[in-house]
Image 1 (tube, one colour):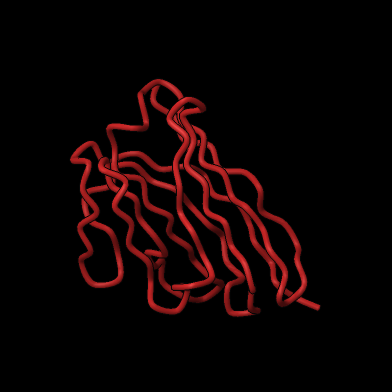
Image 2 (cartoon, rainbow, N blue to C red):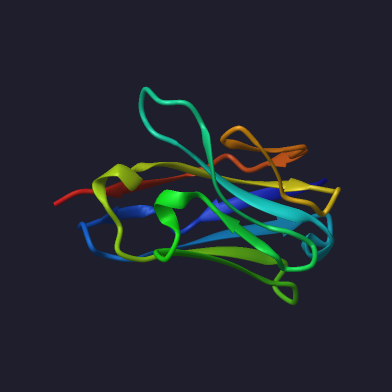
Length: 126
């Protein structure tokens, strides 16, 4: 069974850091493009970052320089290191996988994601 499980969310003060993990089971994550999305209360889901099968990366403009996406194929896990967090980063964060291996941005979303995790909540508040 192909599955993605996110972890690492929580409550953090503005300016703090969190590292989210997206662990895959049932498939070798290294051959897939993995994207992080987020959805804040009352807002639409948006793509935050993506890493393709060649380890090329893409970021939403508002997180560039603060967030870093990476993968550890030995652990079958993708990470999202989030630094200098702001209250507007508060959202449920989801990871998703595409067997195309490509990060194709369509509007504010990465296209072609076939598998999704259930999300982890990140709250940035003092």
